[in-house]
Length: 143
Image (cartoon, rainbow, N blue to C red; front, side, top):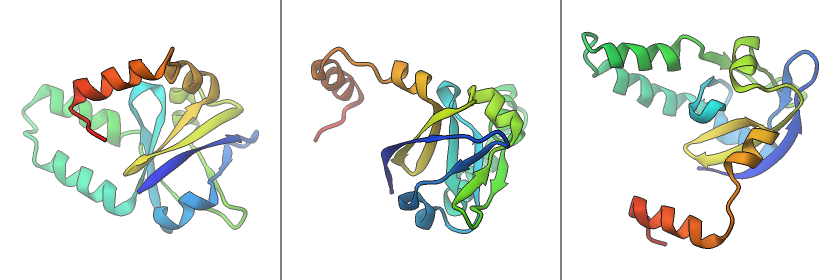
């Protein structure tokens, strides 16, 4: 399981340090792809395989299934952490998510999300805890 929020920067070559807490659960190879909300999703290989199986079960005659499959798979990249703990994010993925310098890596259960820091802050602005509680109730989440 992934959790936590980490602030990092992307260097001029597009390399990003992966927090040490995320490295072991990610394994030697993992997948980075376009995520929802204009961020990137990072999946360990076993999670990615499960996603692949879900897509394989969809009808290829469905226009929407083909469109969603292209979104997630066409821009996906297999990544590895180098000896300095960095990954190289492909330019197409950096451009999609608007990643230039300051980023946030957020652990979200079965994946890591990589966000532009300003976009992350805007997406996670809550006036008060009551707003979060209302969203949880709407989703049927009980803690």
